[in-house]
Length: 143
Image 1: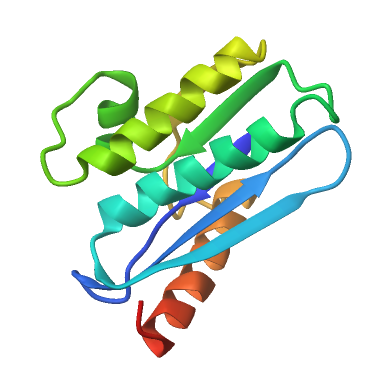
Image 2: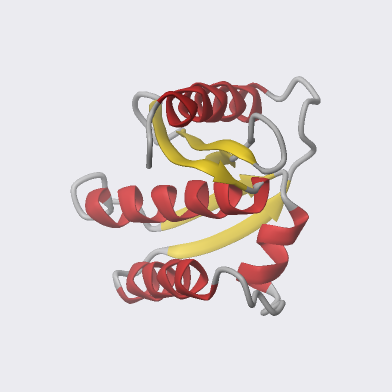
């Protein structure tokens, strides 16, 4: 199971991506500064991409055959799961879809579902914290 988040410090503003992966063993925390000036949607999608990429790299070693990603972004879920049009971030969308296909080819069953944000859900709160840290880092550096 993984939780993803991608807040901005302003809209648009410094943006980060964060994810919390809960495998069978220890918690994996991921964060990545995204851009000094971007949207929340980009942060949310980069967090999903970061999660998929990490799982793809680790799926054989950790014997992962199921992955449930929980995001509080209905827009990101619509783009990835429902094929909603995304004219602005086509390359990012295609990267996510390719990672998804690669994971399925590796035998991983993937589900992307919605979770409420800021509702005291531990994994979501961890992903939010990591993404905010990454957004702060993005604001300090030119990207």
